[in-house]
Image (tube, rainbow over all chains, first blue to last red):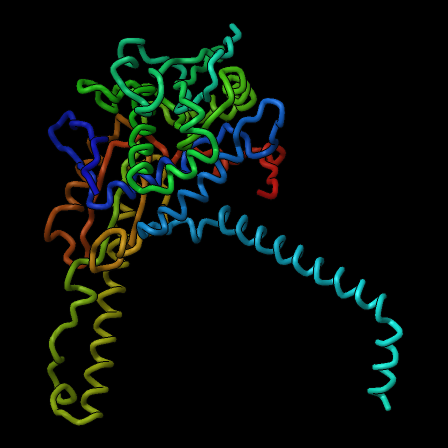
Length: 122
Length: 290
């Protein structure tokens, strides 16, 4: 990692340079800090504020960062809850699909199913 | 004062919001993203946004996602963003110090709009929040402080403990040595943690606010000892001397043998430019499924 050029000369001659993880410090700040004025709330399709870009970008960057060993967001409640919500939604969708498939196959085979059940009871 | 939409296909990348726009010459000397045009200022009526025109071919969703997945591009982009935010504060130039900088609210990297109009509307819709943050951040800078356990204090196991149970070569002796080592390690770790907390407490005395980032992994820091504290402090310019003096004492070698403290700053107060940590009405922060 290269050295960071963000430091200022302190008026008193005391200068605090970046430590070894300076790129990490920078990414930690510029990636997910600061005010989101892109609007997390609505996405206007006509004059889109590219919120989705920001979100997806963040996810993309997260992959990169992860490869670099940066993993601070994993305990970020906002992000992890979003991830959890996404995975729940995915799972929900998968279960629904399976349920639909089961129900339709059940309707089709209901006669067989009844026979099998009574057969098993015997 | 409505801004004209530009004719050529492009996006507007926004960096920061301020009340005092940087001078045109100061802005002109700072390159934003290499691939974009010069930095410019949008007037949102009392608030100003520093923006840059960037080509959609490089900053469109797909292109940008691909680029940011390449570490070198991610770094270039992050540094360009940071440069532009500093330029917005008037702290980017060689002569300006952060103390002289105007208050800015930094926006996250890759805040992109279809045009000036949507950028201005975004600012306008969040005017009260932005104003409140500008008040809060005025004449203040951020300082980053990381505390690691000192090399040798935690991981480097001390030699076999003295005492009757320490010698010998039987299995029982081995186990007892191992558990003594573990106990030493835990004690050292506990001591280091206590010192890290003490450092935090001392620095908070000179700061108006403090927040913590997640400790970075050892893989990332390249150190062999764990990061115990990854803190950011918001420091009043008037208190800066006191803060840096405290910092100097805390980061000095030998002062606290169990830990090693490192600092960087002054930073643009990125870590404190968040309104979601401020007590604001819930109505403005409705979450949508991403």
